Length: 455
Image (cartoon, rainbow, N blue to C red):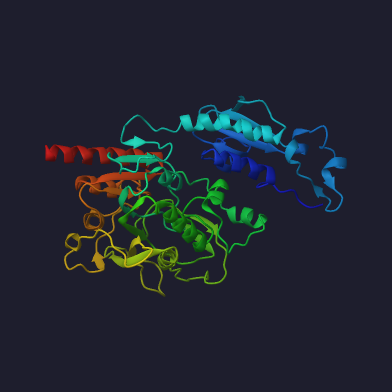
């Protein structure tokens, strides 16, 4: 007899898709609490809700739980009957580590289950506002008003969702350092689905073809932890496709990307820039093939830049950030990686040459495409904060005074505070609530100091 699939079954995928369409963040195949022995199919942390999707055998379906009805003669395997899977939604307590009675009655009709999950979605959305500080907000729908945002704010949530809420042609500069591929696990990514590629293969797809980000996220995937660099590049460029309407026609984009080497058993830091952290590492198996070979420098920044060019972005500069304080490495057969890339993109026009805002006088002395700035060890628990000396020239040269600067992966908000200090409106997106709180506090301080200085 064939083994039954333990996760990523068709009923589970259907429920995940329904929850995802309603804008709910969830974790897949996770324990509601570490002390609990049972694993839930979906866990909604904010509202402390666990969802269990059980087949006919496990919940004792009177019509199909017997071998006579559950075994397909052709394959001698268990038959997943969508309409007879039991979807149970229960709450759990953070203090007692116990599951409590159903929030809604068990539903044997799968369609009815999907409809009823809308009530859970409303509860989830109502519970996600971090606090009442006006600098920290949650967006609802994209405004029909095309005016630029007037107040500096930090929004807590997924940048893929939040970018679609900003008005069109409202941002002068996007400056950001997204999560690098397979180098660290950030807050909120602890339950990343390390087997997401297996779910993609079960859809009949190849690992060489990256899934859309929405599918990837709905199946427990996190940006920066994709199984291959190609998936990562595809998702990152997909975000910039979504950001294109938001960026003004004369706007600029600066993206900081770091590179890494391939290893079949990838080593990922929970925190700490390369060479600057001494914490333990997460190890996961990365599929080999094509250019993914042992000891291979993966050229992730170059792959990203070329992919952006293919999506109608104009690459104006590959700024090299030289980091002289990178400590020695144990490898004896290669040089140390002591630089990162900052790519400068602008819109590709329908015809003619690209035209955009740029003030060369505000760049580093000499206007060279190599700058030397010490790496920082991080702040407020975030390991990859921008050095002010690196980001300040990008803000001053690539956005006008009074313009809008967006950092969609803002971390603790270093780029935001620099923008606010220099008279720009700063907008930040951040997934981790703790970093959102820090970014909001620092941004509020910078805005207040700017107002005091001008009064």
